Length: 249
Ligand code: NAP
Image 1 (cartoon, rainbow, N blue to C red):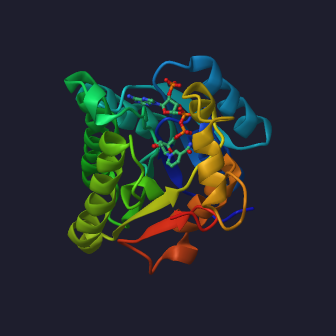
Image 2: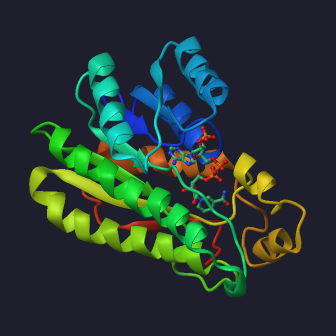
Image 3: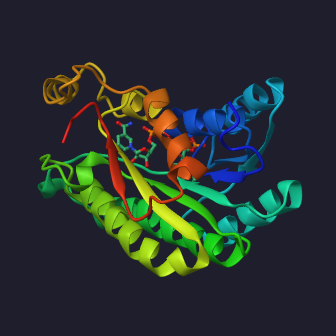
């Protein structure tokens, strides 16, 4: 595969789950990839080894996307290793579900700081640092930004915000030749959904029942669409939120 030859991509939250699958797919498609992680260095190193072992270019970079200094360093280290980035994937995200009676300010701030502020900080840097030829930004959102799922009010609000930020910044950054799109997964089996107790739960059964293609997604289902959306084949696509969900709404 060579769809991303010559591109330099930053993928946030790429030590596991959907982000790791996107980073691997980008590396195998020819991009040099900065594999960002927050705490799981071993996971990020494994993703880097998978890419470099297949002849690609990759680098693990620690950084918490909700911290401004870390985002600046992520871009600095990527540029030092591979030159100016021209692809950014905002995948880092957290999700915990709880009834509204259990809402805490800490829960709210953690979700909005990582899922929304982290996305905005990274796009700010991309807008400043992509070259005159522009580039592509992909936000990993969720069908939850539009769906109506009880107990997910805080998480779903972050993804509704990401969807609208996608549309606004596509309009704002179009003149700089920067495309901004979102991919919106439905339920996907990842380390995160295992840790959250989704797998094997009634919630998993409900998600499968509401998915026309009849199963949960796998990270590669999202990664393949994510290659397309930042590739030149999608050069006329911007401001879109594309559900990759087996038909789940
Ligand atoms: P996951 O398995 O829990 O992996 C999360 C990744 O994000 C890890 O690499 C983690 O890094 C990183 N991360 C968390 N906080 C971070 C921070 N502050 N700064 C940088 N990185 C951070 O999650 P996933 O299920 O793959 O989900 C990935 C994205 O897809 C999220 O945005 C999520 O909302 C979205 N999504 C997931 C599903 C699903 O069903 N899985 C459905 C729709 C949308 P460390 O492990 O190194 O700490």
